[in-house]
Amino acid sequence: MKLLIILFGTFLLALLGTLIFQGNLDFLFAGNLGMAVFIIFTGFSHFKFQKGMAMMIPDFIPAKMFWVYCTGFIEIAAGVGLMIPSIRELTAVLLIVFYILVFIANINSSRKNINIFKADYTGPGMNYLYYQRIPMQMILIVWTWYFGIYLQ
Image 1 (tube, rainbow, N blue to C red):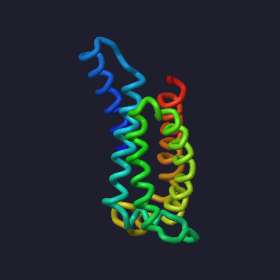
Image 2 (cartoon, helix red, strand yellow):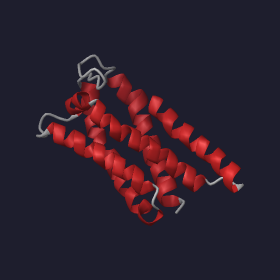
Image 3 (tube, rainbow, N blue to C red):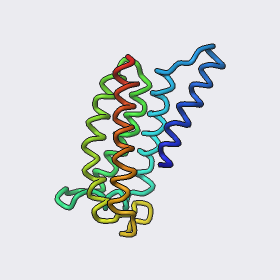
Image 4 (cartoon, one colour):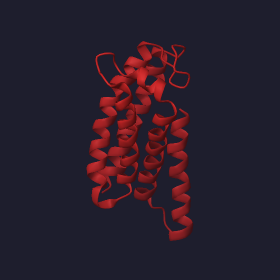
């Protein structure tokens, strides 16, 4: 849930900034900046916690480190894409698809009790999936749809 603090905190700071500097609340900008900072932050975590992230990937998928780095780059690129109006909607659609696909790794991680920060099997397990990850995925998907597609 610490990641949601980044999302909502950036959103609120951006709203305050637009109010101060533009004289109005720019929800479109603030919402997309919040998600951009969030997704760029998570993208960089793929390079810091790569061993734990690789453990999340189901066994039948080869070249796990390739996918960890690839998805990290994808997340960073998506954050940039959300801030470019001409490609924002396409980026948002692809990011929603990405969130759905990456959820498979989250299920696998929870079933195996993976702790991505320590790269071991001391993670919180299925409770994390049910009470934190699923609600967070839903927030991310709805947020991305609302600010990246609906408000366009």
